[in-house]
Amino acid sequence: MKEYLKQFTVLKKCYHFLMHTYNTFFITQRRISNQVFEYNKKRFFKYSGAFRDSKVKDLSYLSWLYHVIEKGLAMPNMRLGFGHDKIVELYYLINTDMKRYGISKSVTDAVSVLKEYKRVHENANYRLPSDIMKILEDISTTFADIKPMNQTEVTKEEYYSSINKDFKEFSMSRHSVRNFSGSASLDDIKKAIDLAHYCPSACNRQPVRVHIVSDPKLKNECLKLQNGNRGFGYLADKLLIMTGDLSTVLGGQEFFDLGNQVGIFTMNLCYALHYYRIAHCVLNWYAMPSQDKQLRKLLNIPDEETIFSFIVCGDVPEKFKLVMSPRIPVEQIYTIH
Figure: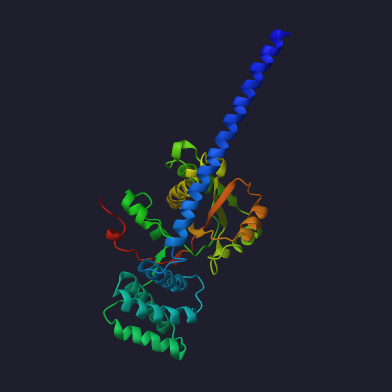
């Protein structure tokens, strides 16, 4: 009996020790998580373009706005005369930002897109509203030396002509495609995912999951919840939804790394899709909680997976247009310490 009580006492102490350790661990993790989230929340409210005016914010918005027009010009069934309000706003911002910051790359790119808009409509003999014509004429006169940003038209074979070249040529040949015609092989998509998953993964935890939506009706229901595929999303044959498994995140300070890992995988997947001749376009998932819940319900996505982005896939027509999407000078990207 004494021996039994002695063993019971030891087991009881072990139990209390383990429970204390367990509770201490989770209390510590909760404290760390709160510190990380609070720190980043404060930085977001203080520095993000959502709450703070800055030169970078203004020029980023200018780039976003001219890119809307640029994408419209490359749409498979471009609607002549599109974007009236966007062009009026773009004209205002070009003048405002030029007065504030001088003639930047964003300003010249915006001007170039408006000149292309004018050229396309003149070639189509389309009569634009008088206020838009006045804007375009003023842009042409004020920025006489800037050329229109011609939309690149390529054939299917031209687009894939560099997939077996050196990496520099291969990577620069890949573009976001917004014109689809025909199907993307499910077997080739699986091969692309297999190739992509050899990308770097923190501590080899491999948190990325890919949901392949091949049912046309289900694909369109998913795309209705996303706000950046109007005019071309319905043409895509398949939809890939990129998620990251929160179960692989072992501490609060690792939370934001999940997005990094999904991003690395997604870029690798884009290269792999291009290699297997699958046209694609990455779409954002800037969703409100209600949209996120709807998508989860549609596809039965596990609660522990965080949704990060969409990729629409398909084949391309024999001839199609590519958006130029000009880049800022590389010197603005890196800092040498």
